[in-house]
Image (cartoon, rainbow, N blue to C red):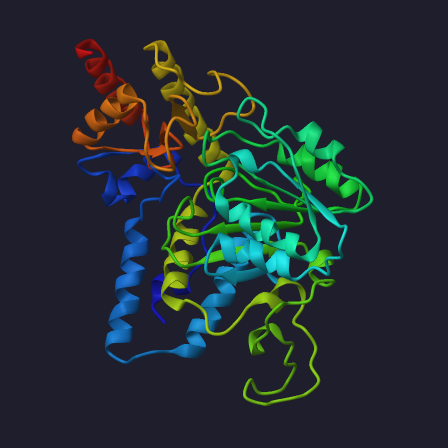
Length: 405
């Protein structure tokens, strides 16, 4: 196993976030504000991947070493959200993680779950919609000002409610949910609280205990600075112990002292969320996750959040000061690291019917600014590799565009 990922967990969280941009070759020659689509990769992660591929190409595969790495990655991610290692399973993506939860509960006809589908990504909608075939009722709550109405979500809980789900931060318009408040309401009534952390993992400080989160799904290609094809599923041990996996492999079984090749007709499920691990792991994506989690651990999670949200607030206020229609005002606890400009709903998933917004998007892209269009609006999203110079450049380009139109 290469030494770059072998040392994970040896860092202390004291590095200066303001200097992080120096570690990312992807910032050279462009202004990158698109972590909500995918994050940039630090040099250390690329080096770890290169070493791994060299080993693989040479046939020097150390599979026992890979499994040791898997456990370090599991523990590293667990620490990043204040969870235990046994509460983490490996997945391909967020959709798989949420489907694992949906398929592992003993649903009964007449049960219900509460969600706000209007601002959810499809990943956090279809797994629950699929439960209607079992007679499960979806209690759909309308968004309020582009935000999840936590009070109304909580009010829809009754004795037949099994689960409440939401995104920590919506992918569009990119507002925070008051996760802790909704989590407390669920905990008080014994209801499973499930979150999609696609837009917050690695960017915003997360404490699953303080936020009363029972299950959390995320992927590694965005704020965790890794590759596509891998994710994590956290399930609070108390709930995981009651859940029956919909599919099972030797990795989901507590083998005790037996060999993994031994077959037995009687078995005991692995503790906690480990029971949801299936088959060999995505070792290449795990190498990237190991290196990127190690990199992120160099910084205090709260310091990353302060840095990123501070820059995003400057961008939001600057764009609003230029007269652009910034969603969600420029102040409030609902704001995070995403700035959405335009009319959400004025277009498809990655298109806009607003000709002015399209022209601004084209102008920024032509000048090497990386951003997205989501649901008809422009979406800027920042991470620890952004700095004040990025904000100033986007504002100056926007100002120049507006003078010409």
